Image (cartoon, rainbow, N blue to C red; front, side, top):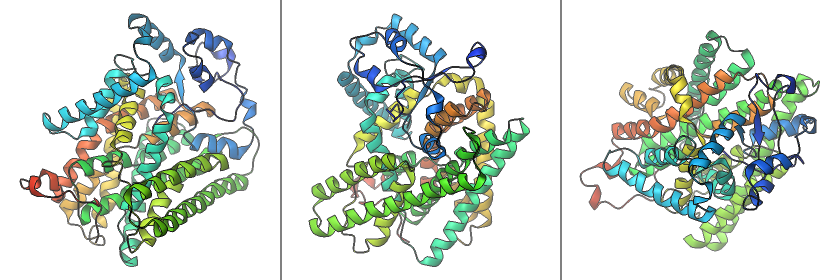
Length: 500
């Protein structure tokens, strides 16, 4: 989820690129929360004029640069889009809503859009959430700006942690041999999909570094769309559990790949290859240790609290907040610890003493905010300009995921039809890729603007079509319990994951 967050840097705004070539290079700005706090007292123009220029030399430490990009701590907007936003504000007064009113609008509007999508169009609710975000965001009415997204950062962080924890928790506990086969299949489909996207980007003439980084982003499947869609249609069964497993593997590989690639993209100072790899490994090891510590805290607390849902939910939520904050403080990835946290809790808690917090059922508010703000942050102009490129990237990604699954279908217990459906279900593209993309673009001047536009268009396309793809896969598996004729007589399952 896109975010604007205060970092340790003293500066407020940084203009990317060579100042002497500012007329030909796009300019990017990072907005400091101090500007937001003074928003009511000053105009955005005067706030920008008073801000100091960011000194890129402040980020000279290799580890700080890597984690600055890998963590969702900053977000950028182009100066051109910012000026367009100001011009729109003159037509529609920017002070139409205060922050509290806007949050209510997001929740109620998202609710209505989701129900219309579900009941009238037979589409997943998440599609309605994203479309409503496009309507009120920079692609439409411009009521929700990036400054508003920054003011809701607490909700976004909680949602991200909850989503990744629940994804890890929903990965089913299987025999060791079955886990091994699924791990190999998941790694194969991630690497093959990334390879095909890489070859396509290289064929189009992009640099090797940018193409490899973009291919790594394209390997990730959206955990939020998968969890929300599966919950809405009551997905329950072995194939659903396999889908969760593959989404978790895709995400872990994509996050790890970004951590490894960023040091080789950013040339802030001469550093040996060994030192860069060591920094990346340190971040991954730190993430594993942090995830294990969070799991230990929850397991210990659950044993003392017994099965009291309200208390255990508070325990899990507090642990997630503490874990995310600690990851930022230690300058390690915030994605991997929460995913590892959920997997460890599910694996170790064989007696099911932990009463897991379901974001789709117990904390739907976080999902609505996440998807609406994701739609508001994306610009439909990218899809208009690069729709054909986005389709080709999506096809290459689908092909790269489908081939390994079909080849390994017998080892993971799938028929050819189920293998195709599983590939379709993996199509939602993670909005976390948007955060990683714009943060890397801020420090890596070699990222081609055309490539960025293509990736933005692909993310938006998969945000719109991904929920329908996941719903189609679950219906094809025959595990969409709430879409069956007798669904009204059934009690919704507590655990949406498979238990094979």
